[in-house]
Length: 315
Image 1 (cartoon, rainbow, N blue to C red):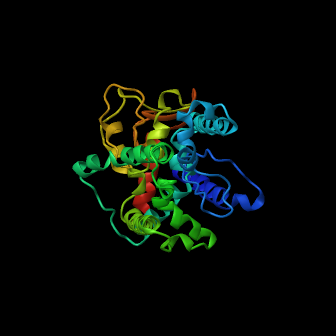
Image 2: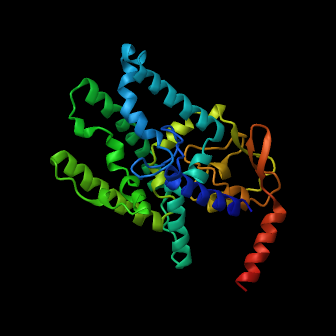
Image 3: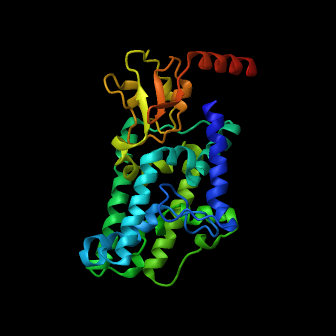
């Protein structure tokens, strides 16, 4: 049931954010997901673009008191509010680029191709990448503003982000797959962008939510974990330790399975797809809440019914 609801919302939000601007919708510059600004007619812009463009202003107090500084504060506050209200639901239910990755995973399954599995050693070695990207995303605007770094490094992350060439394809725009020969910097960035985009498409076909492993938006959203309205909780006393949650997780998270003491089990890589809740055979052991209201809970009856349906379907 959760999967069907999520699929419906994902597809709706993909259409809304990708094409909504064509009917006059504009959700601003603080969207906590990859709603790519390079898509002509999109309905809102990924906050990472605004963050890069405005970051240097916050370190110069007189500018912070100007109209430009007001916009910096406003965009951050809107981002913070949106993140506090919906947390990682932005990642698992709303992000158009995440939805595209899920479509590629579904295609792989339809073709009967097994998902590529990463060892835990590889998984752990990849974890710092998103923090390195976030650090570069924040430091390069400062170097441009205060250290004289060439302006062609402006919007560094956007220039190499795979969403920049890929998402405009859905409106028939292929320009961002072309190399920019203006100078060596633009040529290098455009070449890297195309290579990363190709690698992301291939990686996302063979590995669920491949790009999400490196997404710098995740640590930004995670900052508000403790005050978020969304809670992902585990009743450690009713957990049977079956491991279904770990096996079903597209992000290969084992924290939920292994947690023996803490109630809040939303980890840094969790995108709240809630497939673990759907797969848990113990009643109310895993629960997603909005404030104190229960959104979804695990159900033994649902898992048993699902198993019987799969058994009947496949003989």
